[in-house]
Image 1 (cartoon, rainbow, N blue to C red):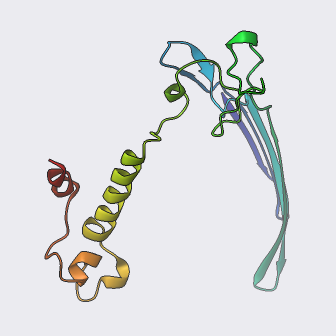
Image 2 (cartoon, rainbow, N blue to C red):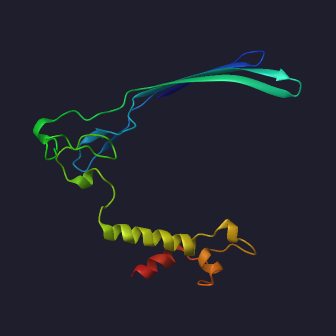
Image 3 (cartoon, helix red, strand yellow):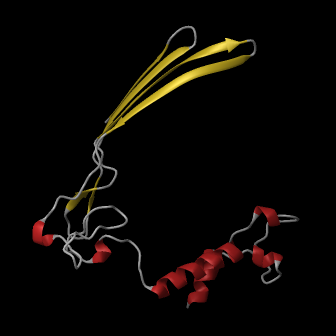
Length: 166
């Protein structure tokens, strides 16, 4: 739910107030519903200002105040909490939350295998050099770095790159 109140006063003054109430949740692989990092429940904004007209110029003094709800945290779950060798909870570096005993791929949306990183880097460089025209090379027509180096005679599509994988 969102509410906005706006008022323009005379003589160059204005005021604006907004309020947002929301829930930001997701359903995990285990069908459990959880809060996202963005579930602050509410945000309030107040802004205002005054404009002064000096000759042909406008000088404005403005302010803004934002109040955001609290950040979510992971409660301590006893034996279910993953711990290191010293018995301290293991913290997920992406979220800052303690990791509950569950497969690590539930928490990270990327692979940590070096082969997958090598493939991702190769795809990036292939797209950057063969499929993405660069503005600095646009004279006399849009070109990629591979076309400028006379390695390729056309701009590749994603489909062309995918065909190389097979």
